[in-house]
Length: 89
Image 1 (tube, rainbow, N blue to C red):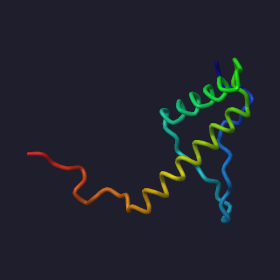
Image 2 (cartoon, one colour):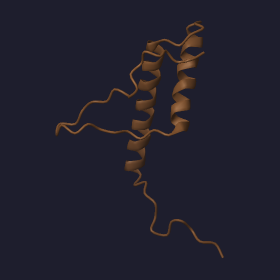
Image 3 (cartoon, rainbow, N blue to C red):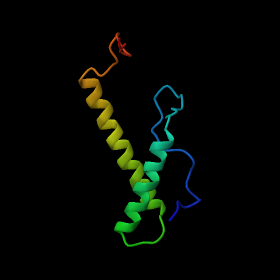
């Protein structure tokens, strides 16, 4: 299984009002997760190949889950304490 070659190389994100285009850093691990999710969606639909629909849904799920995680972290005041990293004797 693999991704269709005709997909755009970037994630579709809404542009901010000030006209600057956003850049979203993505790790190799996150990219691999998108591939695995896309492949799983194709398998759930009993297809041997991943379609653009599968990839778009994987991206939607990824954006929704990272948005929820970011919001939860902000609500809990997730930030590294001033003593980070900890020192050990």
